[in-house]
Image 1 (tube, helix red, strand yellow):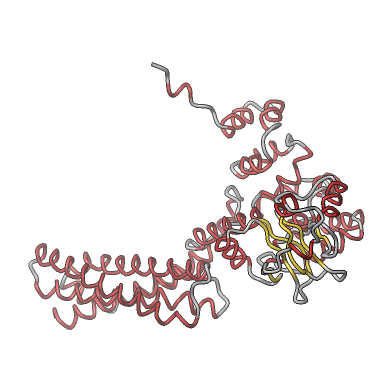
Image 2 (cartoon, one colour):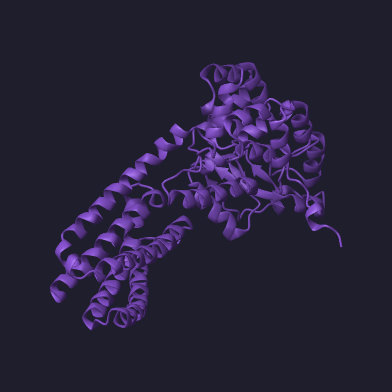
Length: 451
């Protein structure tokens, strides 16, 4: 029988790690010579700073720009600081204008000025056009490399024009029809160019029903639009309908990934830009703020408990059952909070349906409250032989699940109106409400009923 373990290939990370330990730079260079730039970026992101810098010195020069583009913000900044200005210019001057705009703010001022000086006037203007829009908008995402044609020519002319160009931008599925002022008139799919009569005029067969994307549209709405309409590319226009560029599916995939990372890390008060192997002091400083906020909320919950010391001292079972009430509220609230934040990201929640959503979640809270209140009441009766205590904890569970449902809906909506990030702050505020409400209701009822 073949040895399965022996047949398993050794992954690149392990091979490079062994080469680093052996201080074999030639081996490192050989291992990564034919690796895709995005995979090299992933490798660099998995290494501590010293090892990362060693591998970086062996990276193929022609891939440096693409690798920098694929790194997290913190890792890219750290590597840029180690590079000589001329090496940084050489690495980035071949990048597309929209890609260069993504990393330009992180470069030293002298490098930026020199890059602008060596750029052609047209490319410099295009770069300023991209930098004029925030990163999280369609204008910040767009690719400026588009192919445009006029409506008054034939397909034969279009084909001859494309042949003269020699190549077209990647992921090009359509040509854009514009007038003399650059205003978007329609879209001409490549399939139409290849399959229709060459004598047909562009104006007769171009699609005019394509809805262009406004440059100011938020990136999350762009991603939702691509998902709903199964788009591969889409034109981006300004408020005068002038064609500015296009957004491609690979840009949208990046947005979706960033949103997923943001939602996951935001629940813990972290950001997707943080380097996995950032310096200890830097990571500690970033996390300290939310730990401090959590400490304050924990102190608030403890203060509520402190008001009922006498009750807890006389009925020891309360100390055992308290965490159950808070935990059930926290989990139920997190479920609602997650669904609401997801709905916001997909553009499914608005003023018109927010009230209906709140009532729906309250209904879920009531139903789950009744089910689990009954279950916990039976457990309490069986374990502590106290009918009164079982009723108290049943009421407390029901009330806390209602609070959890209400706050799970209202907190992200209110945070969005205050222009705060629901994914980053929502869970901390929610936990505070469910803990305080759970402890107060449970211990308050116990004080009234049991003493």
